[in-house]
Length: 69
Image (tube, rainbow, N blue to C red):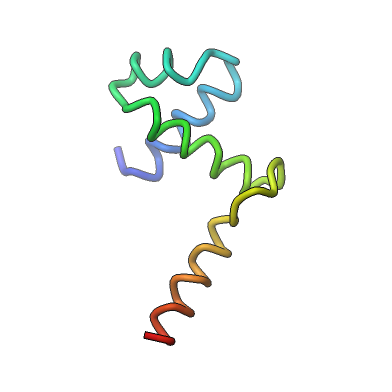
């Protein structure tokens, strides 16, 4: 399973089941803070939170930093 697929699957599991992140992470052998970050990023990407950049915005920022470096 690819990394992106794993992220999507685990975030979907948290969102659809309502189970605590720690329980889902333990069941799937993933560190709970990694899963928490993935879930927060998914929320930012879908517009559910505005306290962090979306994935496209993060990529744009990385590219701009490379250009400026």
